[in-house]
Structure formats: C-alpha cells, structure tokens
Length: 142
Image (cartoon, rainbow, N blue to C red; front, side, top):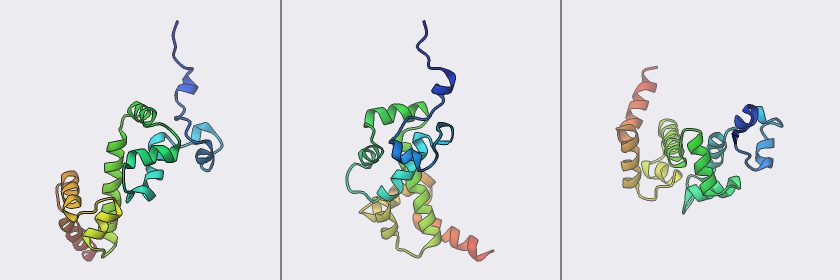
C-alpha cells in the first residue's frame, strides 16, 4: 500500500498562513510556493537584527524544521534564498542609488561594511564599488 498523496494534492504548495495566501489568490493552483512567500516576507526583514531565518519562519507561521524540509522539497534552502535575495536587493540599491556602500550593507543586514563587501564579492566575484562603477558605466553608455 502506497502512502503517496493524490497527484493534485501533491502539487499544492505548503499551506502557509491562510490570510497571507488569500491576499494573492483564493485558489490553491495560483497561490505562491513557500519559496516565493518566504522571499516576499524576507524583503522588509533583511535589516532584521538576529536570526533572519527564524524571523521569516515566525512571519509565515511555520516551524524552522518544517520550512527547511519544504524548501528542500522545492529544490532550495532558506539560506540560499536569503543570500540570493540579499544580492538582488544590494545590486538594485547599488545601481539605482548614490547611497554609501555602508548604508547599502546595513539595509541588507550587515552592520560592518567589510562584512558586506566580503559577502558581495563571494556571491558575485566583484566588490560593491566595482559593481556600482560597472553599472554607472553601462548607464552612461545608453
């Protein structure tokens, strides 16, 4: 005897807080996955002091263990999604604002500019200053 869920039920995203999901769509088929829900919740929490992963889980109303298992089932991890989101936000801020590097780092949770620079370079292979210069050069050429 198999314990597999029926096909339609197996494809449903993890049932996160109903109120959060209902603001997107009243049907399961078009509700966001846990990855997209976690990313949406994480954006305003990026500068959060303390454990960002736990803050996201709390905001979604799920346990850390269950969230990690669900994200693993979706082919990712919370840590990977947080890093990706931090890079996306940092790149946007670096390209679109004149904010100092320290302020950009602080907006994504780095109190020390050196730690932000180290993180950014480990993810993209260039420093935030190099990225900004590249983006400024690209926009000047348009």
